[in-house]
Image (cartoon, rainbow, N blue to C red; front, side, top):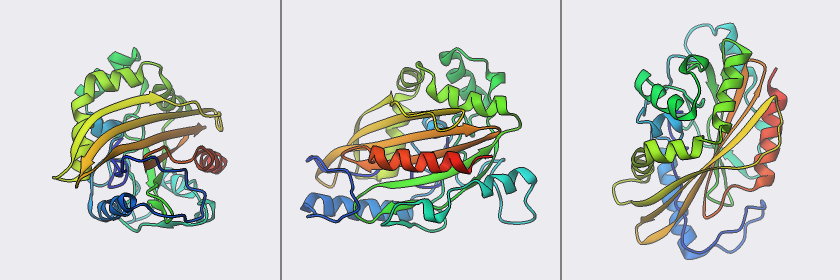
Length: 281
């Protein structure tokens, strides 16, 4: 998975932050500092991701070979992918679009992986490399950020050549070996990706990967959580990235939720995942 801006990290101070309820509350000084860092990063960083392809060292800036382009007529698969993106009305109250250049591209589990990287991860997972597709056709929407917290999310739709390839992509994310494989094979790359996203003054500690239970809203649904500790400008904390995939037919929706201090609210993740699944045909 590779993206153009958002998935890498947000910064969070050392005290716990409650889940966003949509109602602004008192903002501790550390949170204000974090918010400034986050908003600056959201608008300035391109080609960074803590998703799989960048974790494998494949930080492609911009869209991949399968990315939908705004120039020229769309192919039927591109038109389908665009039509399956979340509607603007699906986002919670207080979440606003962050503009062009904040979309997440090559967002599928193996998106953008080269032959060597693909061989490493599929061997570790115990699945044949021929069973996965690294360049599905895709469409990506701008990132949306919660005005009442540091939470940011992106929505990308991937259209695969067959239902089997689409299902295999989510099944790989759900593979019980995936967290260990990522931590064992690509721990340094994960840390470097987070450090690059945060900027030159960031010190990144341990990055961990874990599976999180989520209801099946489509034929297959998965949620992988990447958490990384950091210190920047005298503020320390942990950033959490949920990579959620839901598949139906040849289509897969990839939602990436990023927040500092705690994961994005389970209520919001479930709500948007359900909405994304309802868009797939």
